[in-house]
Image 1: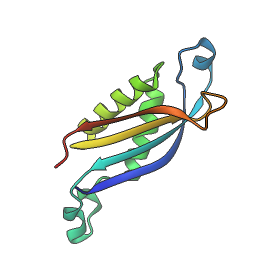
Image 2 (image 1 turned 45 degrees about the horizontal axis):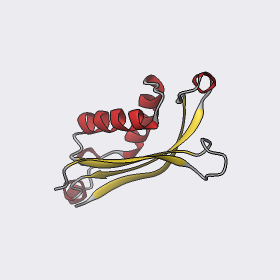
Image 3 (image 1 turned 180 degrees about the vertical axis):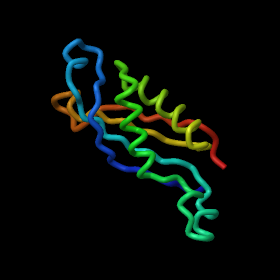
Length: 118
């Protein structure tokens, strides 16, 4: 299986359970792997036949900011569903890390895998 990936995408968004978290923007770090047949794009060097990671990166930030939630788990599930539907992605692995959530940890977060490999 071929994969297109985005690693270490840093976005600022409102997320969190506590009242003070709803008043600020926090950094999330996103890693995304997407199953995709890259042969069609490579055949004639055509961007429109692959996943445009620049466009997807912008979509992730916009989605997170337009759909505030309390939990990383909720954001991960909703974002995965949205990306799969919007870009017809058959499989993805999404990791969302919140680097400032726990004082003694580099980062905490969730990782989900959705869809079927081909």
